[in-house]
Length: 315
Image 1 (spheres, helix red, strand yellow):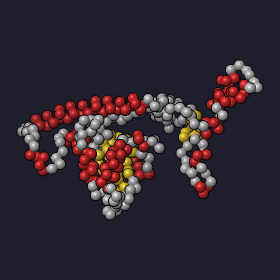
Image 2: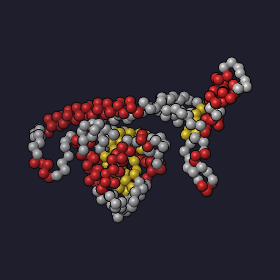
Image 3: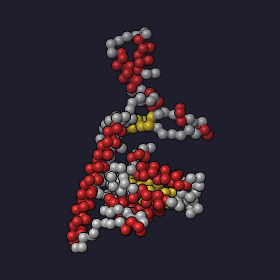
Image 4: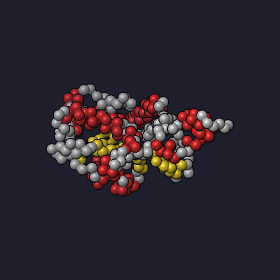
């Protein structure tokens, strides 16, 4: 049992000075208790953000694979979603199979060689993002960042996935094998809509102008272009510099606001090298082996921290 119940039962027959502290120390070092009991504490880990690294479009990008979805008439079952962290520009690519070679080819030919090579690429720990993917990143000197296992919210693309899933479900209705028919138009709607954080559409942050969605849009009076090519380049550079600075400030404010409310229900933890730690045990029930997940240890260990990579992370 816990410290209170154990100490109360002990006091029925025995007493010695600082007995409560001795009981607490004994239970806190009990390996069975550490593995099977809930910690009854706030979840560990405060929010961190990528906004410091993202200072311009396509410097920090993230990607994720949605699926498997119902196979469409075109044979697609997956969606590769790529999102620029700075501008929130979103790209979607329907896939027949989510293989590493297909993903690397799309990222290289339709992202890196079109929008520019990023400095940081964020992804999950799926098998598609391993050997072949890492080899491609080394080719372009891109730094890979992986979100922790069972913690998908650390990947910024998950927020785009949420919007895409809503739009797909709204248009697919009862026919779930037609989700890829409107995928391009739905993604365009996301790119051309004003973002709540940046106050600009992802398209305008990237290209410095409003996206033309119809030929009639050209009838709207737009500012005249500067006649001198050099003057136009300088003017455009200054405007983009002001725009990026404004977006950076707004991203930081939004990140600080999110971190404030997120950290209210979290607690700060620090780890150090050679510290013994226990990690959460993620297992599934298996009736063939007479194994129940509910009866399995909640934590396993102890493990020894080898390296400290940041104030709250370890490896």
